[in-house]
Length: 313
Ligand code: CTP
Image (cartoon, rainbow, N blue to C red; front, side):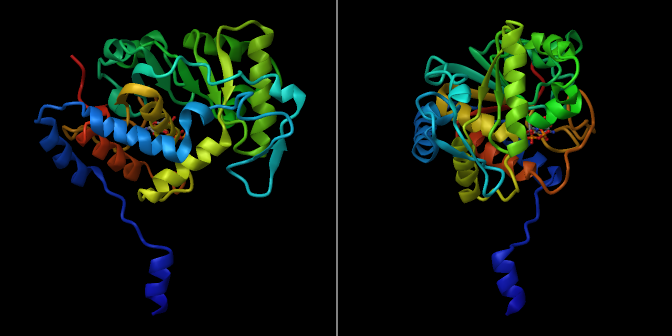
């Protein structure tokens, strides 16, 4: 009885792997994919009801007035009270013209390497990318160069740019590749990330950079997490990619996703790297990317979004 009770509380999940997924994907690839406008509208409504992305995607003067307590979504017991200084950094409302039209969300999967999808990705009205990915000429053929929104976790600023404590020039130069993009930072996920995110903000505004920092609203991140949990994604935290796809499904009329394939072989049995730019694997036990993939795949099959897995010619 105790074992059954244990399994009920902490169920053991077997994550799907490519051996199960590839045949299913190949079967479906043979069919003509069609966008299903009513299914997309239905899903948009679900996201609107749970998470109100058009108002809560980012911290704004409207949703985060001075004096508001903002609870960190990655830590219990800590909150930040919005003061005049922080408030002055928020845009009045979400700074995009909504609804966005054609959005492409680009994950960092190794499936993009040699995909020749760059041109196709750049044809979108709005391109979203994850975690300040490399976009140099060496990759543009496969991943494009356009970017309207790119996420940056404070941990990246720590690892790659020494918390911006020393020279900030390298950082300012590196982000030039994102042109006029918004840099979307989860400043209120962990207490330690707030100061770092504000530093990124000031670094870029002080030099008059074209990129603008906006901060993720932790209530939005928390609600999106709950939404997917209710659909069976069991992970400590959702991946950045799934957050972005969820936001895109709510904010955009059409969504296509690239680079979402958390498996070690492609559809034709060829080994691929984890990222299109390196093969550093994610920490285990943090995300549940194969489960996330299955949910995205279901949305592809229902015509809610289109997932590009093959090369683009
Ligand atoms: N991704 C994927 N398949 C891969 C690699 C990445 O589907 N082989 C998606 C995931 O949704 C991921 C996103 O692309 O969130 C960005 O990739 P990456 O920068 O590697 O994200 P992580 O560092 O693993 O983590 P996080 O999601 O916490 O930012």
